[in-house]
Image (cartoon, rainbow, N blue to C red; front, top):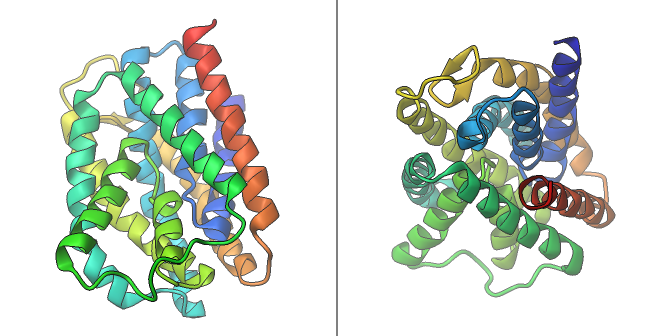
Length: 269
């Protein structure tokens, strides 16, 4: 039990710092670690990924608040983009989380592997952001589609959306610090609706771990959040004065190893 507590506290330290620093969302770390721990504790693989995703989203609700406060003080949040994208992000989160509750655990793992692999490859090969416009689209429909996809894909794998929204915002000529700060705020609009839906949809499932409300496990959320809320603040402050290219590549390598571990766990062992 002590070992598990330490694992989740360390997970919170790392995921919070990465979330604040790179704007990629700590969920990309929380989900696989929670999943492996749940399997190690012999909980059913049918629901382990659902629990990991819901608990990650629950943690992001807390972490994003800390990160938002720091980025707001630094002036990194674009309110105009938030107002434009919030409806689509929330809609995508609601539909995505409901879809996740209907998908089998094995398929969810495969989705996580696929999307995490794409995120890692993008981090490795992209030296400079690809600029396609001087601002976000003027079309309300196009903005709705973009924000919906960010919310939908993010909640499917339990992340705050920064892995998708930061590259998209930089494509529209937003400076990296503005993109990271705005994405941190978007993360809350993704995580909160998603976790509520997963709490409700998992309420009828038996044999879930102790301290669970639906698919949300309070023990994981509290342990990870207790450290991540502090390190997210530190990561956000550090992000202003650091070159993130090498850090993104190191993190990408970590993601690739995570994908490999999940493949070995499911298809080899």
